[in-house]
Image 1 (cartoon, rainbow, N blue to C red):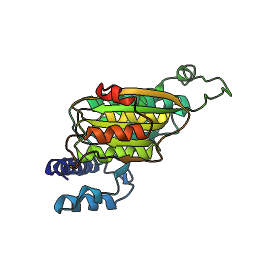
Image 2: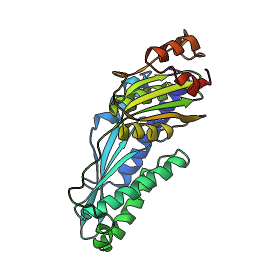
Image 3: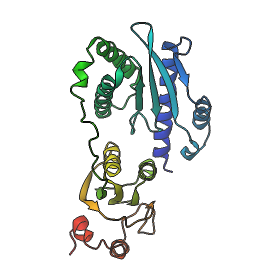
Image 4: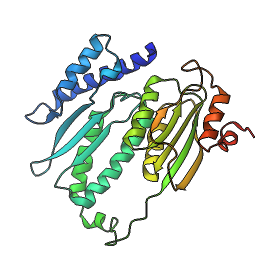
Length: 286
């Protein structure tokens, strides 16, 4: 792994631990902040103090914060921080409270997703304390508003048939894929979403994913939020009948790991899988 990528991991892990220490001093009451796996902190400190590679970081930092709300109630906020938060990845946050009810909780979920999306566009600094403060304000306001205000806007006809799931294939072109962190994240996201296909690191970078449309679109939303010099969808192939690939894997078409693509090898790979038409889409070749 390049020294730059190792330093990125170290910076993110260090900031996560500093933020956790600050939160522990603020939410210091009994049960206010609970670690879901206390051993992660020791693992993170060992990573920062030794030459341990990032691949040794098997668990994420996860904790539960109980916010005080009116009527002596508590609001449970679960926080999971991917290893590259806050520089390259977004915090995963969920909120649970019996005070809200289904309609209000759904409204809060939408607002929370919007808040996190806006944070992603700002400077990459830790923001969990800001988020918790924002959540507390939102909850207190939501409790005061009548449930009917939300139930009417979220009314769904009973027994409405769900549309049949469809397969989709997405072709993505990037100026380059050299970061080992991004390469690992592509594989992790694809396998987590049960997608198949391949990624080709180097310059240019090519990604092909196929699977259920919802999961394919989730993959695209997630990876495009990472920092890229240039990345775009070249072709979307909806309503596919079958998958061509059995797994998702990284494919190299050159002798050097991150060098210029061997075009001949890649074209043969496309044609062998029935994707000869992508020569024109990707490279303008007849």
